[in-house]
Image (cartoon, rainbow, N blue to C red; front, side):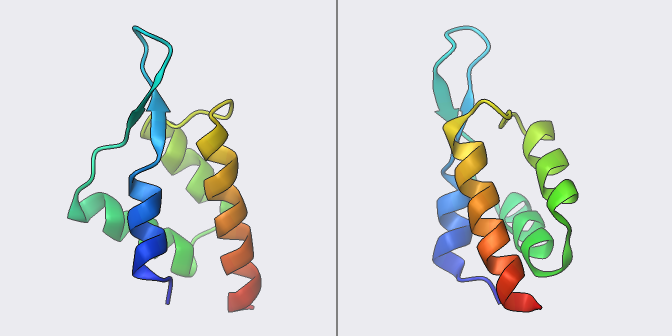
Length: 79
């Protein structure tokens, strides 16, 4: 199972504010953490990328790459 601290760290990742162009934190709630945990345990990379984009973390965000790297590391461990 994914380390709870990793999931909580993912929830603290940032998304770009449309107004200022700066990054702001993703909303942290149990549903979001549960969704990310489910994707990490049994989802695909494509599913994760769609979820991140839907929640405002776009490809150009430095956090997008960091989350994707974490997922790839975890996916390698589940095989």
